[in-house]
Amino acid sequence: MALARFALERAGWELIPAHNGAQALEIFEEQHDSLDVVVLDLILPGISGQELLDRMAAIDDSVPIVIASGMEAHRIAEIIGERTKHFVQKPFSLMSLPASLNAALSRAAAF
Image 1 (tube, rainbow, N blue to C red):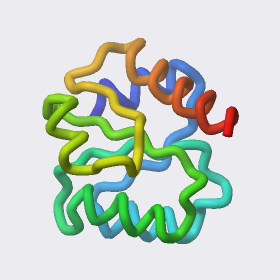
Image 2 (image 1 turned 135 degrees about the vertical axis):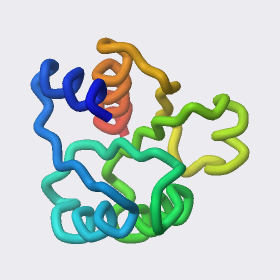
Image 3 (image 1 turned 60 degrees about the vertical axis):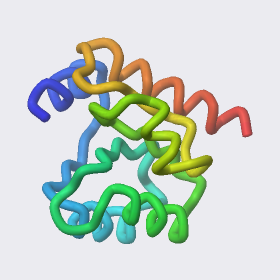
Image 4 (image 1 turned 90 degrees about the vertical axis):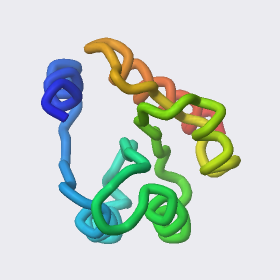
């Protein structure tokens, strides 16, 4: 988490960290209109990442969600299906996470 925070802040991103699924959902419910993108791990304390993804989409499906996971990409696809096309493999580099967020925003702007 520290590496991700450092990489994103260094790239100019403002972060709103959540320490568990319930807190992430609360933040999303209150601030989804002002969020550019969400980075979501599928393994979370409390609400699973898969359930959180579904609940966030029900609130506002226009916010791009980037899945960050150590699972293999094909396994992620099995779990989340077509709910998001944005994925970054953990461990990620200082450049890959910001690049993934920028790509997600570019794809979202194209639609």
